[in-house]
Length: 436
Image 1 (cartoon, rainbow, N blue to C red):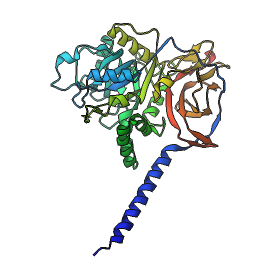
Image 2 (cartoon, rainbow, N blue to C red):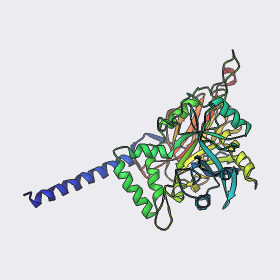
Image 3 (tube, rainbow, N blue to C red):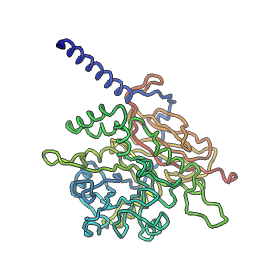
Image 4 (cartoon, helix red, strand yellow):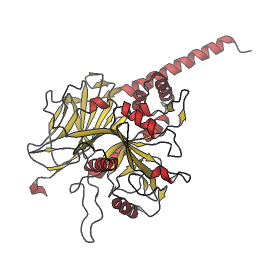
């Protein structure tokens, strides 16, 4: 007979192992070693655009065969989260009523719902597209015919799941003709994290978050690695010299990133509500998801009452590139400003020539608390600077972008609770006029 003490000892060792596991994962998610220089204590923030709107991209409703949740529920959740727009990316199955796909945009609860589709372009990858005048499951005609159709319909196109599962991953080496690149895909990050040794920790945290109303905080913890991800690396490669434009005429060299900026980096939620909990709440819930990864877009003017015209204006603004992605605290991120201080302000997505006094500047109208700026040039880290602001001379030509992190405490190089907050699209610095 096995003695009772054997089970007690086994239970104790199991508890010790569980405690070590939780402590290890907890510490790994919150301790970083980063050398930071002193930033600008009192920067003059770059000018703010006349209108900046915030919204989510790549959200599914019950029009998709693998999701539930109505547009009305989505609109109410977006309005409560303080969002201005949501880009839907539903995919159609054979039984979808055609009438559900006729309207391409609508205002609901003061939120612009852009009714896009997620489709597969055969041999290329997945694409988000709006205003296509037909609903399709996949496009068999190849990339050139798809882009021609999108251009005819003035459609806005986004590379979806660029570094996702093998069946979804983007196959071309570039993204010619595409307006935006889903540098962040929340579902892909979640799948990678939940396949890691920390899966139990994260599952417990996510379930606990749903029960305690802190789900968005635990979803954001999945991004503990910051912005060093395959999707971001691939995006950087498009700006660091890859060919971006349409094919050039025979005998002529095609444009490079120094001639034409690359696609705009955006964050996609790929949010699929799968079930209803007691009381009718969706799981995963729109309310928590729409407080995680948000796109902030600079418009030329406030959107008007016509939803189709507003959607067209939004798509054009994203294509121009004055966009940043925030992870949590959407309202706090609205006050962020960034750009190149040249003879005239150059916003993200823009380009300027190299000059001796060119500076990269970023900041807030009010103190953002403990923040750290990471500057990246052509995909390579330039350095880290402590906030509240950033004002740094530019060393030479290249594609410069800024990442902003929050942290709780710092002792020398040890940083506690470093968490990604804002990812800014690049500004392209070309050689001086004498350098081409």
